[in-house]
Image (tube, rainbow, N blue to C red; front, top):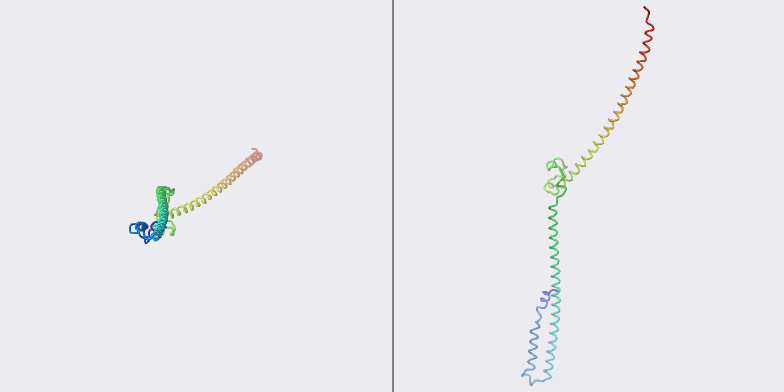
Length: 217
């Protein structure tokens, strides 16, 4: 219970000080000149009743003081807790502000990647990546451009691998054909040499025959 609630709940209760003052006044009157001839028993009874009321007021006053003290302590503790929470929130706010500023100053690697221009993107990219809504959203547009760039590079890399493989196959075929040509050339040279040797032997055989068959003059 807060101090304000206790004050509100007790605002209709007579205050202790005026009641105590009226009791003290009544006690003074009992021992005053006007009651010198009064019945002492009656005075004692009235005095005892007044002292009882005074003690009750004292107990009530002490209880109220303890209640107010406890309420004040609770209110102070609640206030300290709230103040600490506020300080934590302010610290967290400053921390987030610093992190946001760091993020703003952070140079992402995508900024250094050469990609298609906006015009090229609008011309080459699929329609679902370049709708009017996307073109008006800078963040989503950047994501789509990077995604399209990745797909294009993957496609070109696949094409490069296919062409490289075809080149290797052509080189291999060329080497095989060159080997065949070299083999054919060697065979032709071998045949030509063999034919030359045979021709020489034939010529050597023909020459004596021609000499022996010539008629004497």
